[in-house]
Image (tube, rainbow, N blue to C red):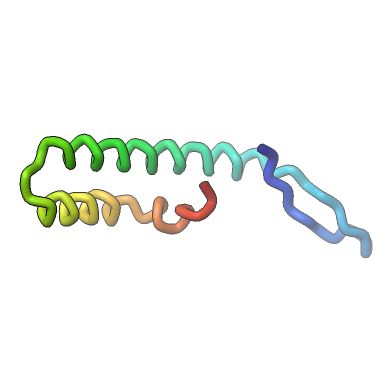
Length: 73
């Protein structure tokens, strides 16, 4: 999937592909998948659901960029 941004050059709109943003987005999505996988793995091994949720929130809050880019995935 290509990310495009519209810029105006001399009064005309042009589509510009942003590859660096796509690479960064893929990296953030991989981090997000890793945290969700880790959460699911700990959920299978734990007994108290409240402790699982607290652990997931603590892990997610330690990575601020995931919240900033969550809806990009």
